[in-house]
Amino acid sequence: MAIFTIKTLGGESKIFIGSGIKDFINHVPDRTVVITDKNVNNIYGSLWQDYQSIVIEAGEKNKTLSTVDDIIKQLLSFGVDRSGFILGVGGGIVCDIAGFVASTYMRGVRFAFVPTTLLAQVDASIGGKNGVNIEGFKNIIGTFNQPEFILIDPEVLKSLPPEEVSNGFAEAIKHALINDAEYFGFIEKNIDQLKSLSCQVLNGLIVKSVEIKLAIVNRDEREMGERRKLNFGHTFGHAIEKITGISHGKAVSLGSVIAARFSMKRGYINEKEFNRIRNVYEKLGLPVEYNFDKNAVLDALLNDKKREREYIHFILLNSIGSAIIEKISVGELNQFQL
Ligand SMILES: NC(=O)c1ccc[n+]([C@@H]2O[C@H](COP(=O)([O-])OP(=O)(O)OC[C@H]3O[C@@H](n4cnc5c(N)ncnc54)[C@H](O)[C@@H]3O)[C@@H](O)[C@H]2O)c1
Ligand SMILES: [Zn+2]
Image (cartoon, rainbow, N blue to C red; front, side):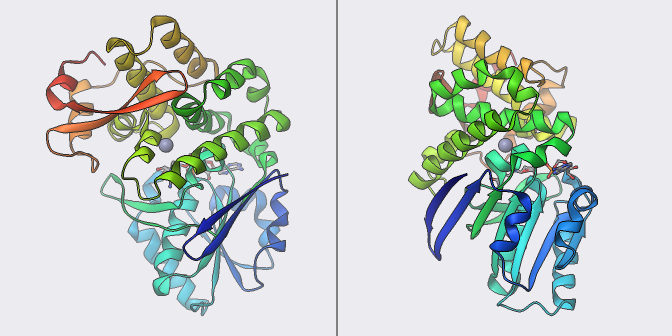
């Protein structure tokens, strides 16, 4: 098992990678409330039958203040006070909602995560950001707050639909592309083992991704500079997700290929590198081309919360393993062949 320890404002946060899902009981107080979604509860619910639990509907459309409202009412009905403890068990949606509820309920209660999708294990549960959407604006309300622990068990990925596993690969490839050429090589070499969910290789992937995300977040906890690199593929990705309704991971894959093409156009990476990048997404079951409405995507992009005046901070690749943040004018984006 790999363990990371992070210093936080309130003390310490631990990440256990390769621990069994049921081991959460060794880390939570007796009166813990589990927040999970219906799918996860159907498969793993017996593990928390001795705890009070709140089961939400699955899906991005439920990552709303209305769900937060329902959860808070249930917490009140359970009599949870400031000494309460919330454990979010599920994908990125459950983690985002549970983290937001825990950060705001009674001005904040203790909390932790057991992420059960690859996307949540390598990305969404790590870094202390949580929040919900409002009217299709993603993560427009949220907090920065670290859970006390994150327990990651790659075995639970065996019950995850293959498409959801691919979504997680999109974020893992992102970590490699922006920070670590060797890690990119590891992914390229282990495509088959990754697709067949070899626990050993998945463990290696999760450890590497968590390490990279933690290092970047550590250097820039409040997203003033370097953390923006984690948005690689997400500027277009979020816009594509909004317009087409496809999953986050798929949209990020498309957005990453666009960003890589942009990097090639600017002469930062060559065609060979571009093709290596494109191939990895494709081989891991992610889309690299999609027939979306370019104007609608650009409109959505320009309405994104991260826009600063007439420029967009765009993450490009200097090479495989190294990202740069560039301000790109709206005019140039409009001209770019997506
Ligand atoms: N806070 C952050 O820093 C951050 C970073 C990246 C993504 N996100 C957010 O994460 C969300 C996406 O997360 P996601 O991709 O995990 O989606 P998700 O939470 O919707 O999970 C995907 C699906 O898999 C099901 N599921 C979860 N675990 C399972 C398991 N072990 N077996 C079977 N089914 C299982 C869920 O019920 C759901 O239907 C987005 O809202 C995105 O904005 C947040
Ligand atoms: Zn993402």
